[in-house]
Amino acid sequence: MKSPLNHRGLALLPLLLLAGCNTVVMNPSGDIAAQQARLVVVSTLLMLLIVVPVIALTLFFAWKYRQSNTAAKYEPDWDHSTKLELVIWGAPLLIIIVLGLLTWISTHQLDPYRPLSRIDDKRPLAAGVKPLEVQVVALDWKWLFIYPEQGIATVNELVTPVDVPVRYKITASTVMNAFYVPALAGMIYAMPSMETQLNAVINKPGVYDGFSANFSGAGFSHMRFKYHGVSNADFDAWVAKVKASGAAGAVALDRAAYQVLEKPSEKEPVRYYPAVSADLYDAILNRCVGDGSTCINKMMADDIVRAKTAAELCNTPTPVPNLSMKSNNATRY
Image (cartoon, rainbow, N blue to C red):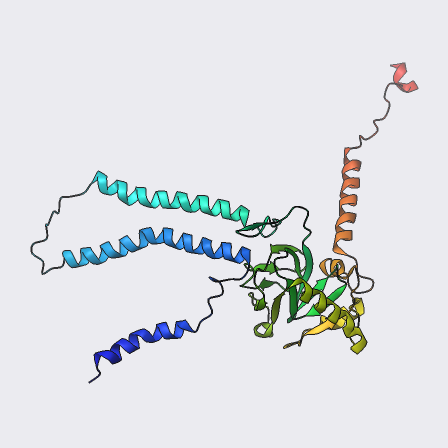
């Protein structure tokens, strides 16, 4: 026979297992992710204001009106109570209104395209601060990060300074993926021929996990990278390290090198490119990396010109023959 202590130990086992979990989503290191975590908590508490009473009343009614309780009041003809109607409909309505306002406000405040206005809840962003730009390309099955201002690129390693706003420009080479660093911010889709953006900041130094959160084929499970939040001095040293990798045989990332990199591969190690073509990201975005291919933005511009020309031709009035001069045969009659 098992003792009560054994039963209590089994009941506490799930808590012990959860104690080893890293709840990074609810305890992030970036201000945007922290605001999103608070939004989840507030929304959950608001919904629990309805969920908990409903569950409690369901259990209470089942116990009070059980068959063996002959003391319970039986009123088969009862069908209406204004007070109950007000509570049943009024409380959920108020919660829905509050949730709607919360959703509307947070949707605008946490818009990933919106430039940051603060470093964290205690430090506003100083005027004139220019965000660091990182161009993100989801490949099969690896991540390419291009630093246009620094003129470098990396594969499966992302490094940004702490407390510095970063603007991520995100696209994909072939199929849809999702750029996700739980400690930094929410998931942002990466789509070919399209650019999405994310404005975010990391507030604590550390090494964080990044991965694709959208299934994209056989190598999807290995499509992971490490995100390093470092000091400004360490970031400058890292940039110098990447640029110095050219002396160790690392090649520049031009169109030819990108076409080799773009080929599907799994478990790709970290790779550095000490130099990168200035127009490479735009060529990736517009699907014209290969020689002789037409860029999508140029194709669209040509289509607009053709459409305007066709519209102008349609709006041009057709010349009408001059019928005021009658023929000699007509004048006879």
